[in-house]
Length: 364
Ligand SMILES: Cc1cc2nc3c(=O)[nH]c(=O)nc-3n(C[C@H](O)[C@H](O)[C@H](O)COP(=O)(O)O)c2cc1C
Image (tube, rainbow, N blue to C red; front, side):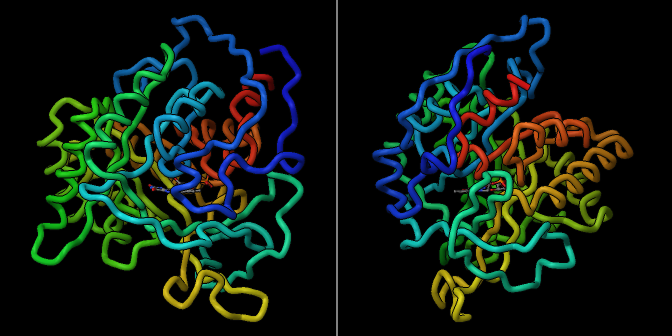
């Protein structure tokens, strides 16, 4: 890519319109009127092996921002070679009402000691995408099986050589149903759509039930991953985790995951924190006191996760692939992740506010 890339934020709005509903974004987005950047691929002998698939560059978009096949196709065209189809459930599920995303003032990096603090909603968005901090609360909405099977297939078809898509799945706790088995039901939908790689989301901080803390329990991690792995056979399985400060807990979780057949670990999910308006009332309403904070201020914790996961992987000889996400909002952040031990570096909120992020990295 030798062209001059256009600037984006703040002259242009994010490609996801936070003033509009999740469904409107799904049906009408991504909101992008720019130019698709030119792409010069590296020679094939430099492509990277990612879980058995050769990818041109291991830059990716994690679960969440790519709402359907149109969003997946868009991210792939913008140079993200590992794209994740948003987390799906076994049955349709509505999104939380607006607001689903708001800006927050984090007053610096959200280090571990700050996760119990209450953050304030920001009155104005930052001018620089690097200092972008937002909180999101969607509730993992999902479409029905018929839609998903067709749309996952369509998304796969939209990819170019050197690109691969992951499908993220989650189980839903329902009365009188086996919660862990529901991960398998969701994985079956992904498989029917032709998923090449499956990621089990064990970490969503925005759900009001026990789903959110599964990733810290080695027993739950083993039980879910072994059941899903049995159902998906040779299809590679990733687990998505949230913040794990204690390296020994991470060690137990990664060992349990490896025993359950997991080939890669992706972290971190958003950091769950209380967010209030200027007057002290809950920014997302009384029913959603906590929500997931993403963007630049969580990068330090994401880097710490990558370093620890990389070390555990080597110490225990697990042979897992480490995938980093959290706070990549500028091109140089991808290399920070690679240098910390990640094989794959991903950006969610960063690419929503600057869709040229991967292209800018390639130009560096
Ligand atoms: C709009 C949005 C929706 C998200 N939805 C999901 C989701 O459904 N499943 C999941 O595993 N992570 C979800 N995430 C979390 C991201 O995958 C990622 O872990 C987190 O945002 C940290 O990365 P970032 O700082 O680059 O945004 C979502 C993030 C955003 C911004």
